[in-house]
Image (cartoon, rainbow, N blue to C red; front, side):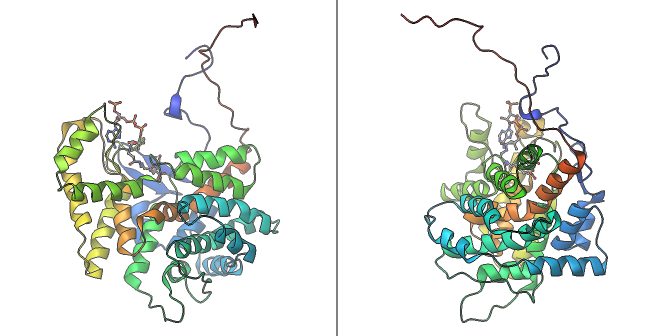
Length: 382
Ligand code: SDX
């Protein structure tokens, strides 16, 4: 460090705030949401209960959960102008760009001043925006939320219901979606969450802060990795399944290619979410009776990478993104929408951190730098 400034690119060793939302033990491969291990939450809670826990600090009792769900349903429609804006966005635009743009402009149509309501608006409206984005992509007319369904069943119906056909809810798919959304709900100061906190620290609005978080998540090194994993596995299949060649490519410093879905800034052991996601992927594929060569290939890539000294020495294990895409694909969601699903899962975490940053009264985020430019000099015009 130079005097009082510590050089720490990527904030690898910098605690930028105090938080009580989630805790990660990278050595042990542990993740807690408000103190509860992810392994307990995944088996005993729904995504909406987990959202309540992350936002409010405690699990809801029956009455609290009922009122939380009812309040969200109160806000489960969007202004018709949003549909017109969506109609004018080129269909070729990536769903993450569409989602973050629509989230930004949502602000113009929300007139609730109560901050608590803003969180409920986003929980209700983001699944609608995601479903409308998906339906635009596949050329199916827009749809509306179904207030008689629970959160994830409504989300699935908004995605997949076809006009004039009844939509069969499949509990296997609904359960898998619940679980994968729970696995994404929060993850302390990852790049997109810190982005949301940074904007909030300047007193930017909630919607613009969340929209910025989505933009950070879109990056291939972050949430965009789940789509990149499937594209990598498809490329390995297409090129004859020679896993060793791809692993060597990922180890080659001259090659920018990295084994997508591997490595993590904090987990120097297995990402506990990847372990759970692998089991959810195996179950949903087995229960739906679909054979998916990509899952078999993913397990083979994991096995081969974890036999390789480069990955073991650098402690590169599968992260959440390595198996999540296989689950999304099994429930019918195409790879361009994977990072949108990550955003739907991470929403409660982003909002809880934005709320905590305000209650902490965190100062505006303004890091320093190590200046390596010119010393002071005078303009000499010839
Ligand atoms: C998410 O932060 C979070 O919590 C994120 C997340 C969340 O829930 O919000 O968990 C979600 O973003 C998971 C990560 C998804 N991204 C990927 O799977 C992309 C591939 N992974 C890498 O790009 C990388 O591992 C990162 C971005 C995840 C972590 O980067 P770091 O911590 O900055 O690690 P690094 O780039 O400094 O790597 C350390 C070493 C380097 O080699 P050396 O320079 O020491 O010789 O490991 C190598 C890297 O080259 N390395 C890899 C690798 N990941 C790291 N080599 C090959 N393949 C990889 N995947």
